[in-house]
Length: 102
Image 1 (cartoon, rainbow, N blue to C red):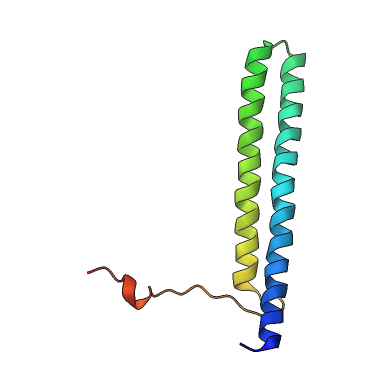
Image 2: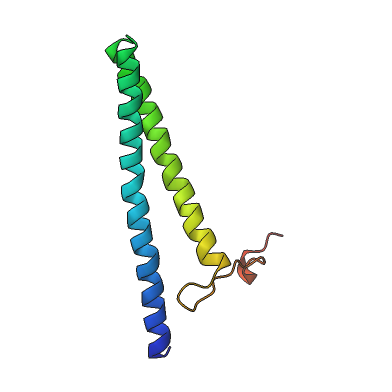
């Protein structure tokens, strides 16, 4: 491998890493905020505190997981469809020669 290729791979790794870090930080923040808002609304409407904890926890966790999933999907789609730092990733449609099913 030559030095310029190694530098581009390193830049691609940093590109993916920092975006993944941002997605990983954004997911729990959005999940917590949505859980807080839902819990506040339920509390103001007179729902029992145990039910508020259960509902807001489940909804906040689900939103956090959705943000993570769709963020990763967006990141991979962008890396595969577009050129990222001069590199183009491709999906290999044929399995490697040692993994065919008989």
